Image 1 (tube, helix red, strand yellow):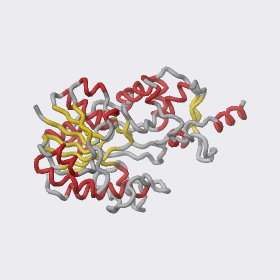
Image 2: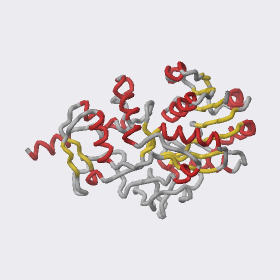
Image 3: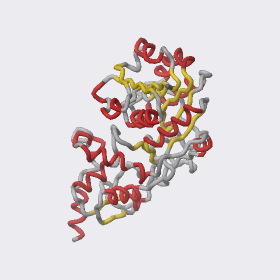
Image 4: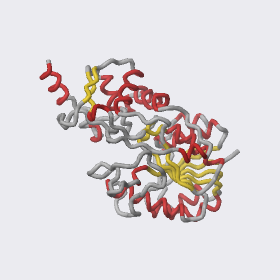
Length: 338
C-alpha cells in the first residue's frame, strides 16, 4: 500500500487530499498539533493522526524519517520551514508544497495583499513575476507572500522532485475562513436583497479543495520539479457566487448591483477584484489532471458543512466577516428607497 504523509493536514486542503488518497487505496498519515481537529470521518476511513509540531526537527524526523511515496506539506510558510524538510526528501517519492497565488506581483509590484489592487495579464501563468523572497512575519500582508516565495525557492533548488501548488481562493469543508459564509448567513437571515460592488463583476479565481486534491493525486503518479496553479475550471464573479449560493439554498433576493460611486460600506465581498484575477491552469491539465467539478458543483461541500453544525460557522470573534455581515448600511439604503 502506498504511504502518504500530510504535514499540517487537518485544514481544508489537507482534509480533501487525505479523503482523495484514502478513496484511491493509499495509507494516509496526517500530522498536526491538535488531535481534536482531526475529522472523525477521516479516522473512520482509515487515516491515522500523529501529534507533531511541523517546526520541531525531532518531530519531523520521526514522521518522515521512514520515507513516503508522497509527502504533502500544508504547513510550509517560510524558508526555515523548507530547510527543515530538506534532509528527509531523499526518502520521498514525490513531494508537494502548498503555496498561494499571493506570491504573484503585477508590473507595478502590487499583489493581492497590497493596498493597491494588482492588475495582472490574464490569465496569470506560473511564470508571472513574484514577490522577492523575504522573511519576517509571514502572517502579515507583506510578509505572507514573500515568505512563501522564499520557501518555494529552497525546495525547488533542492534537486528533489518537489511540486509547488499555488492555489487561489480555497473553498471546501473545514475551511478556516469560509468566505461564502457572507452569503450563506444572508440566506439564513432571510435578507431581502444582496448588494454587490462593481455591479457584481469583480472576481478572484476560486479553488475547490477537492480539485487541488485531484491535482495532488496526479502529481503523486508523476513526480517532478515544477510549479502549478490550482483553480476551478471556471472563474465565477461575485454575482455568480451569490447566485450559486442562493440557488443552492432555494432563496430569492433582489440583486442590487452597485456602481463605483456607491457608499463604500455597501457591496463589499472577498472576491471583488476588477478586472477579475484568473489563474491559468493549462500546465496542470497538461500533466493529466482532471478537475472534479466547477465552482457550483464543488462549493456544495462547504455550504453543507456550514449548515451541518453551528460550530462550523464563523462567530463574532472572527473580525474578517464584521463588515461583510453588517446590515446597517443595507437597511438604510432600503429604507431610503422605500
